[in-house]
Amino acid sequence: MNEKIQDELEDDLREEYDLSQLKNPVRGKYYQQYREGHSVTVHHEDGTKTVEHFPAQNDVIILDPDVKKYFPNSESVNAT
Image (cartoon, rainbow, N blue to C red; front, side, top):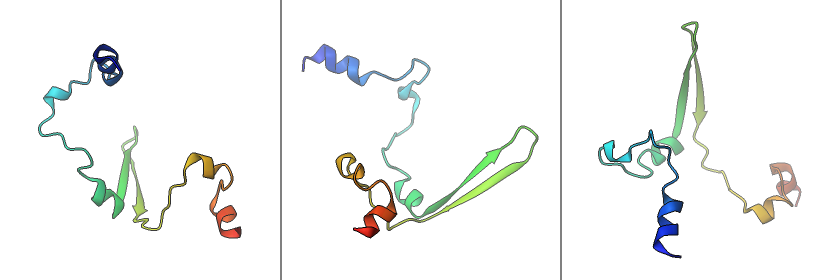
């Protein structure tokens, strides 16, 4: 692939996102903590908050798209 096309493909962020302002960007920095369980707090306009807890899910398996069309849910996998 020529360099000009590659540069165009890689530069798909909106103009308001300036990655040069990030200090020490690290991909996957919080991945392990996220996998261990996390909470999400939603702040509503009326001043109330809703907190939802997501426990760790170490037993999750991701199926490839070609397999997923035959096994769309856990019941179909377990029945096999």
